[in-house]
Image 1: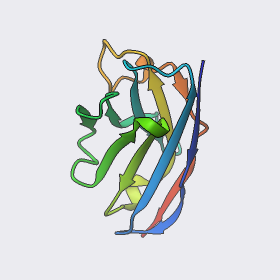
Image 2: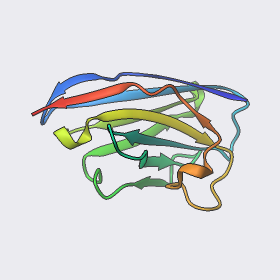
Image 3: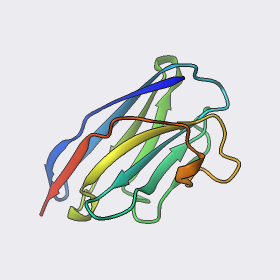
Image 4: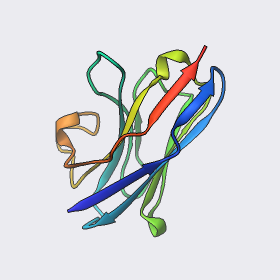
Length: 125
């Protein structure tokens, strides 16, 4: 089992920045992929970003490319999502997720085995 604990959500004005953190514990491994998804009211949960264990490979949804950055510090078993130039459309509950492998692609929700509790991010326009 892997436990994921997120922090860093909150309220920010459009154009501002927030950083989300996700600390993993339990049976983490070197093949793990860590990702962020988000879910806005009335919408399906969607892919935001993912990173390989090494941090060398990163993946982003088109809607956040150039504004969000995913990174990880393996010594701390922590992954971060730096969100800049936030827009009202970024308002959602953000979920950290972990997968032991993503053979179907890191952007697929069903590839992930573990999920965090989901902090709220609200961007006011």
